[in-house]
Amino acid sequence: MSFDDLDRVVVLEKAVFSSPWTVDLFLYELNHDERTVYLVAESEGELLGYVGAQVLDKEVHITNMAVEPRVRRRGLGSELMLECIRCGIERGARWVTLEVRLGNDEARDFYHKFGLEELGVRRNYYTDSGEDAVIMATGDIRSEDYTRLIEEIEGRLAVKGDEREC
Image 1 (tube, one colour):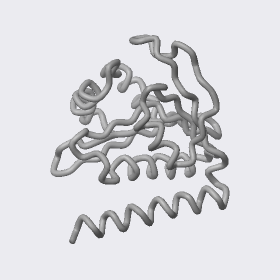
Image 2: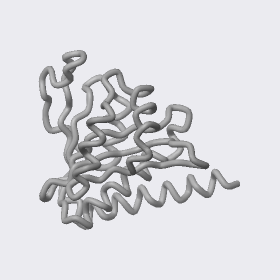
Image 3: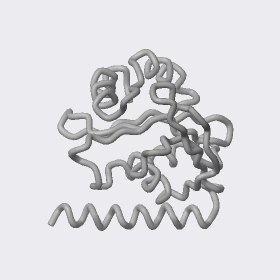
């Protein structure tokens, strides 16, 4: 993600979330790129999705992620998540963490596929609604088991890609 992407990112953020991040929040994160990973996915100049994370010591903490609703379930979110995890590993991370709205079953299911387990609940976490957040985390993302999980996800994406081309 670059500063030039921000207008498009904020448009998608507003379309997807009830309490969207502001341009200023994204600017702050991009200005601290030594500890963040912000990636975009685009096609023919159109922003289709993004993921953001902070890499804090041994932790990749996913801060936000969105995929354009009309292109969901095609592997784009998985590709973004995989690349974010790879960037975290390159920076020395050992696990992935995040918070997700308790009522966001679609996102929780998605994160489960990446080996994130539900560890607890932060009560009244979201200030816009007072909704609780589920705390999720992986085990060691450098372990053989996690490496196999990532390879399985990559394999499924490769098959999906082959199916799209047929």
